[in-house]
Image (cartoon, rainbow, N blue to C red):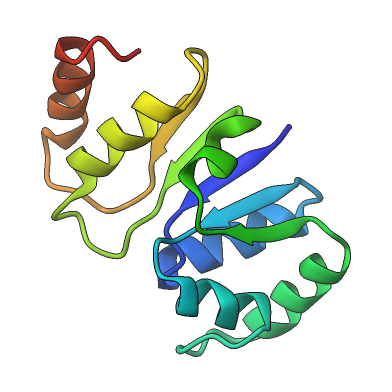
Length: 131
């Protein structure tokens, strides 16, 4: 199973690293080319014990890759984790990912969000003719 993670901030990086460490192929996405390049080199702007080691191990094993292209992210993914560090644009992110993803792709909102956000996302997806 291919897993995708939308977001490479603290939350997305930890989720990506942990899922890859279970042996699952994970592709991590961010629009920021510099952030993606830095993480692909193992440089992260925050500290989490052993995270750099986990990242490096999974990058070397080919289980953790990075992209700045949304189509590459969702092309093969069966599950996409929406893992932004803040919830402010999570509904728009969900719509953008759903439009690019295959019909049977599962979207997981991993970002901490206010109550009712998932219902609003579902309503907007149905109204937009997405999944």
